[in-house]
Image 1 (tube, rainbow, N blue to C red):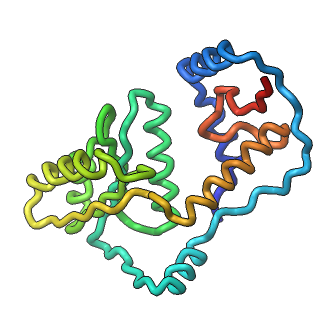
Image 2 (image 1 turned 90 degrees about the vertical axis):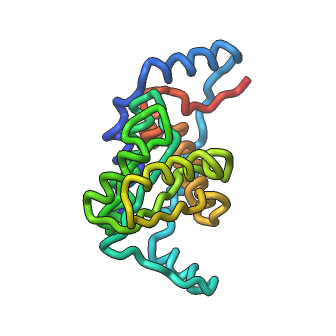
Length: 214
């Protein structure tokens, strides 16, 4: 059962940084605001779709599901940041992904600015026994990074490991489950504004998630 957003936020609430606070200070200095209370009439946030829901949707759409074998590895790659807190979130997502899917070899990688690199992650997957590597970009929409940068970096990494094949998947894109994710985020943020929930792990320590009125 997926850990609730509130539990995650409590575990990560200390992750606010001075850079986040600085952005908040700049934002608040640019607008005249007053904070208003939100009536506590919202319904509780619905849980995100389960894996069985997704399986059902695939069957309805006539999709054939291909499962990973024990010799497959997944690299989940984001852009990378100079802020360690942002990079840590990818590690947390990878841990969640591995726990939910049961895949044996799942590694994080950053396209630039942080370690581990795509090359490092590719090497580690091979060391763990992978003969095929699935690179999944943790990006919303296709752009230059997906079209050019990531394929070039993965190709370079593969040159040091003969006999290892790889696939680069599409980014998240316009998947219908993204609607559920955004709806869940909206409902949780509204519950925080109403005083019924702590800041989520993304906003933790920033104080940014408020109701503004000019």
